[in-house]
Image (cartoon, rainbow over all chains, first blue to last red; front, top):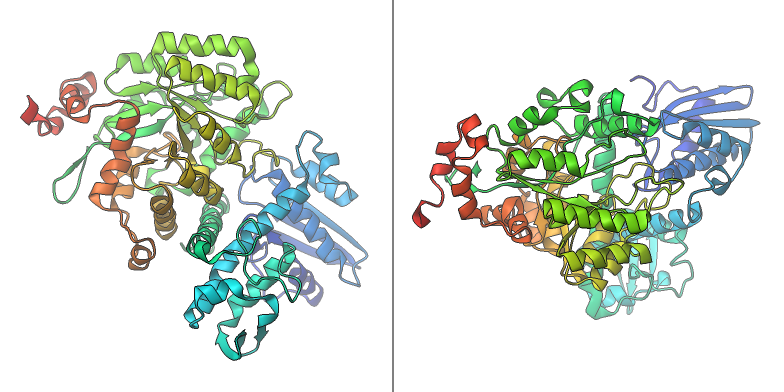
Length: 253
Length: 353
């Protein structure tokens, strides 16, 4: 289906909107909705923006769909020149309610009164899972650089600095340089989930957000791997559903 | 039975099959149409193109086709019915216990009938569960916590009402509890990623086995962590298994995690028929392998010994099936006669004859 992929011929204002939308994640997969090919259309006219998007199935959780629609609205709205933004969800069991609610600035609870719990707690839970998945990659980057598990669990936020040449890890007067991307990616998601924000905070945490006792390092490490496998596995399911529904442009295991 | 390249026989119990009717005449709520459309999306997403059904075939396939798909080429040896009533969506229900049982009665050697309960049905529900036990001697129940009922859009396994029903299961000797924890029909945020209720139920009823269908996907992480601590929690591989078709690497990772956290004794193969068809799925799963990297990472592999348990022995343990005796029984049953499978079963179990 045409129009679902980023287009190199985007007009500048459309490209600017697409860049903002690239910051919106599918909360379940912690991947950009642009990268996932959910965005069908971006129209810009006289400062008015219309964004249309579709999810892999009509049955995607309404809470997740809501988050993506609301985040898309907020991201586009943050562009200085945008006077009005309308986000439309299509081909979803609740497309009309979500489109109407998000564009009216209503809350999830007003649109779905029979939903229990708020969208905020769902968002927090998913952000926390993404934190763990990325912690696995960051821990592995440090292990690969020769940092020991007992050192890893003791590290504080201030012991690590990400620079162009990698993540610099301060260990008792010695500095070790590890692959920077996984560490930066982890720190971003940790901060977004409200953790590891102060210089004195432990760098890595258990799933329950406590410091990691050295005796539990292996288990925590494996649980972080598991969080990533779950997220990727669900990504594969969504991806396959998306292909089945819209035909395949890109694919890959 | 599946035969490996080395000629070893793998007895296959398909632990998750349906006998459904989603024909347009049976649909009484738009949810019923959306539900079958959603299933069909899953079907086409994870079925090789040449094996895909049309939507019309998929709505209602009938007993003959089901028997042929499951047993015609001996892909599966037995099937366990997992009912899904969905009475709010379908006039005569989607996949009802009594319809399952009627088909099973024609081929009792081949099918195990499971019941179901819904704690929101209260006293009448308890009586209904007793009826299912009495009439069909069920050993298990399928639970669909996302099912609609009046104004309610779902229920939890750790609720007081659910515990009353689990108590009743225990009393009646219904030992295998199969909660659906996977893709849901109208999840909102109610149970969109929550398997926590299984934890409490499994702790409170150690005498029951909780087979979490679809291994909690998309909450595999929560599921594995719970199962690692609760020895009576099992994983049903429906939905996970067909990932072997076009996402083999992901399938390997998921299997690696399951084997790491639960081990080879607590995983049950299921096709989710007619979502997918054992006719080709069994072979696809049996041919799946971990990559070298995955073998190193998980310290395990999908060996014949592991797969023999996953494909049949584990389900046989839960449902008291004596596999050798069963092979002898299947040699001359109606299904073997119809599909010419007598020779297929002739090799097994002769020593005990």
